[in-house]
Length: 216
Image (cartoon, rainbow, N blue to C red):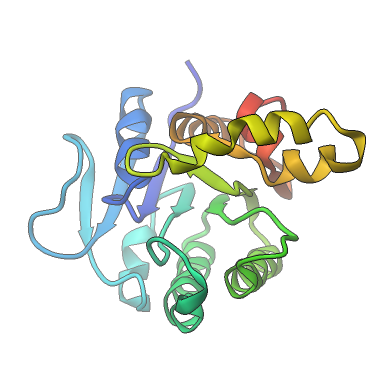
């Protein structure tokens, strides 16, 4: 059994956050999740902290935690949401880094996106800016860079699996195919939990091959 961690989680009621909170609790960690509203959809044993991810008001509630996992972001990113990426994704990350740094958090975990890429340039630009802010914050950090996460309601890219299989075996396209490859929701959740239990010294980046195999 690894050391138990006290974790602050934003996005805890979301697609990945709710599943991650359940896994972390099962593995013996304490989880405090930032939520909006009075009836949060959180697993039993998860402490709810009412607040707004776009405000610094929740910062005092981060005290006493050693790990901060930030999962807030615009749902279903697309080219038409460039303004939202800055007003939501970037602002929420700025608040999270300030809160974590002010509380003396030792490990910051962030889900970014694989880059470079010829598409989703506005989204990638904001995520790159978020990574730079994390790096400048001085905390140990784990940054995950998936491209597309397969799971419930997100299955259409399974049709691309044969294409990826072929591209990964051609030397000229192998690196890009692996970097922009598909990962599953369980792979993401397991990787984040493993990252919590094995914090780095400095900033650690986990790309698609690392998320798939946790070989790090």
